[in-house]
Length: 513
Image 1: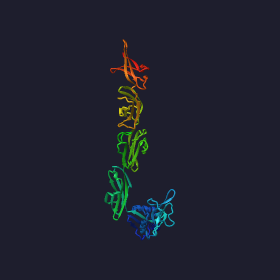
Image 2: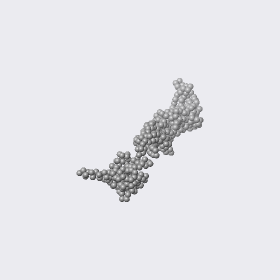
Image 3: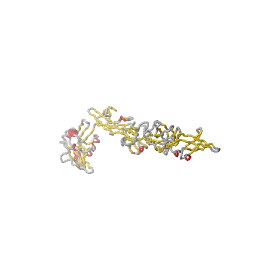
Image 4: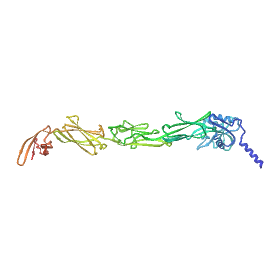
């Protein structure tokens, strides 16, 4: 029984170790990769575990001619085929050859020997020492020697990018692999290669650099370089410093159009990183950018939107909102800032009627009936009259505030008796807006009588009469006289209506008692 056990153990030892190859068992290349030949026989899965645990590496991945040449130096002359880090994996509809780092085998990397490399489950690749070709075999059912690949010197960003807000701090972390001793480290910012940090003799592990109180100038790519004698490695990370959109322009609470004073446009400018998109909206829709169409329009620039209000139309009346938007953070969270302005679009007044309601030898009383536009209530209106033919200068001038949107009566006193009056009503919120005006020309009837005289006075015990006569002007008939007064020392003595006038002559008898 003991003899049998001894024989089994001896055979097992023969399976675990292969004969020593004549070549060196490891080599380190100029780029810091070390390739180690392991002569112990193992299935492919266990071989990769041993590479990880013993050498902090993996089974070798022969992706380039340089790696193939390095492997050739340590297996040349060996008789057995060696496991490499290449395995066929079953996907949903097909099987694919993958390297141990989960990258797909490319056609330009393939070195299969004739008749090998067919896809199938649980198949792994081995390299042939004599010609560097590959054969496939059962990954777990067979034991073979293997080759480990170890990166002895590397620097890797952890993570590859950072997202921070203005005024925050950031810890930029890199992982350093330096198997053969410490390394010198420096970090600079592209594109000007400004050195941010520099340290000597840094041990392997995590290396952290802290940037405090970030601002827009800290945006960019940061490169870290690790160096040892005769070798240098580098990696980079991107820092994105974001700032939520913030409108910095002074947007007025209320504006009016047409414009009389002040700017004819409103600038809405926003800060932010990335540069915000800025636009003017009304009722949720973007204001038009077509400057050839009637109404308000906007110009969109980088980080700015300019609202032009000079040619507003009535439908533009209302609240317009400036919206600034950008996206910040790794998850591109939307940040919004807004400002609102009330746009009042003034309209023109309307003259309904005008008539002479009173006259004297040296004056004329005119009554004007008009209506203000409903957007100009509480706004001053200028009422101006130019008399003809006596003068081409304004003969009346008044300022009236439109207190309601109903009919407005305005009485105007003329100091002359013109033949016609050109009346204009203009909206004047501050300065007058010429385009917001209505006008009317009123013909004034000349004085209908001349040469008025008292022809006869009759005195009786109970009554006293006087006869008044006058000359009618052309085209004036007695029935046209609708109002007259008799004054004594400027005091009215009697008023009569037109029924007292004789229809046959320019004569009237007035009771003076």
